[in-house]
Length: 123
Figure (cartoon, one colour):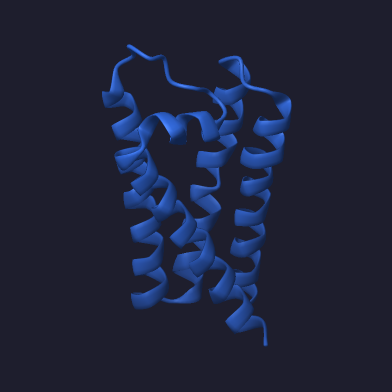
């Protein structure tokens, strides 16, 4: 029972990160607003593309580990990748975003990713 739950949550989280990455690549301004720090109208869109690529690759790597490795490797990946939403929390707070977005989206995501890692370690 625990193994399907552990893998299922990890797959959903990684697919969500792939979706976020694709959104930053194809709808960067809307994605930035959802992130909690809206992009400036005449800002450098390259940075939004960098975020999109980072998220896309992270999600695909997580999915590859889940498909072709063992639960421990995937759990270590999820443990380390939790640093991304933790960092995003700080970025939103330092750049004028709301505490609700910083903690309600980014910090909460980090917690769920760490729960996913714990479930994978236990599987």
